[in-house]
Length: 102
Image 1 (cartoon, rainbow, N blue to C red):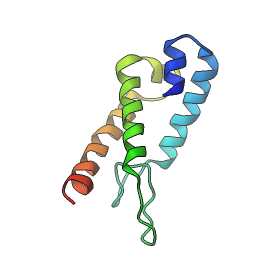
Image 2 (cartoon, one colour; image 1 turned 45 degrees about the vertical axis):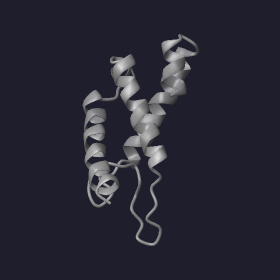
Image 3 (cartoon, one colour; image 1 turned 90 degrees about the horizontal axis):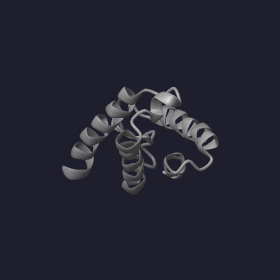
Image 4 (cartoon, rainbow, N blue to C red; image 1 turned 60 degrees about the horizontal axis):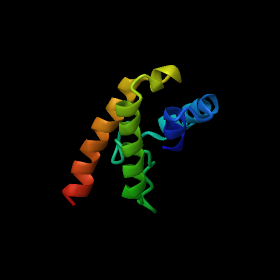
C-alpha cells in the first residue's frame, strides 16, 4: 500500500514503482494456481496448514486499490491487470470454500 500511496502522492514515484514491481513479482512467485490453497499466496503444508486471513485480506485490499485508484499503474510496471483480476476472482472462490463454508 505504501508504494501506491507514494505514487499517487508523487513522492519518490520512480523508486516506489521499482519496489511495487518487485512486490508484484514476489506475489506472482508465491501465488497458488492449484490444490487446496489455490487462490492464495500460501504453499500448503500438511504438517503446518496455516494461512492467516488478515494477510490475505491486506493483499486483496491493496490489489483492489491499485486497480481502482491507479488503473494504468500495473501496465507502467510491466504487470498484467488481468493477472490481478484472476487472483481476486480465485481468492473469492478460496474464501467461499474454506472460510465461509468451514
